Structures are given as C-alpha cells and as structure tokens.
Length: 193
Image (tube, rainbow, N blue to C red; front, side):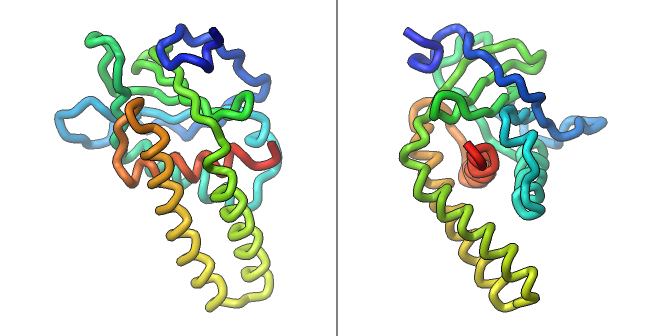
C-alpha cells in the first residue's frame, strides 16, 4: 500500500526537488477562538511555484495563503487524541493528486490525505480561462469586462469550495471560506502540470 493510498499511513511521499514557497511568518499568531482546529501555516510545494506565474495567479496565491493564515477552520478527522492543532499544511500535487501533508505545530508529520484531481479538472480549466480573460481585459483597459470576470471568478470559487468540502468529506472539517482559499491554491499548484 502506498502512502497516497491511505490517509492513516506514515507519511513517505517523496517531496519535489523544487523549493517550497511559504508566506512570511508573522510576529504573533492570529487571534482565534478557543478551538485549536486551524492552520498555523501553509507551505506550497512543487514545480509550478518555480515557474513564472501571471500577476493575477501570483496575487491569488499570495492572498489565499495570507487569508488562510489569518483565519481558517481546519480539523482533520481520525487523528490520535494527542494530535491537536494548530496545524501546518504542506500542500502539493503528486501523482495526479492534491496532497495534504498535515503536520503539528513543530512541523512533525501527522497525516497525509490525497484527493484525485479528476473532479476538479473542469473547474480548474474554467479558472485558467478566467485568468487569461482577465489579463486580456486589463491589457485592453475594459473595466466593465474586468468586473464581469471578477463576478465569474467569485462564482467559480464558490463552486470549487463546495466541491472541496464534498471531496474532503469525512477526512477534514473545513468551513466555506477555508475551502475557497484551498481551491485557489489548487488552481495555482495545478498550473503547467
């Protein structure tokens, strides 16, 4: 059985050679309620991050990571009682799957979850088309078109968030905003794969 085949398996997935991209750490942890079910830090890994991203994709990535680190709800299901949050999430695409490498606050591995990308492919394709259309509209200075594209992106993010929540199902409890941001990061990671 491979590490990807079981969320409870000991994490053994080889990490990509590309260096990870992570948002800068802040001086203090975000203000939260008493729950420890949240992400302290998000680390993106993989080749697409070393390739030049469009300004819109880079802005989406930076905003999604910053928003996730500021406010999120992330509660892995089935961890031992001694494994409590906050968590560090290493997110990558490996072997055609979105891999959630969940770690404790000291960055020690806790669990690996892998989601097949097939159900997301149509939404990712639509997202890329919207990013390309946005870039063209900005070049042409078409403000009304830019606003219409932004409305379409919001709707697409909502659809992606619903699918992310459904696919994570009984593996991780997340709220809608966390799912939206994870969908954005999936789209960024998926570029040029």
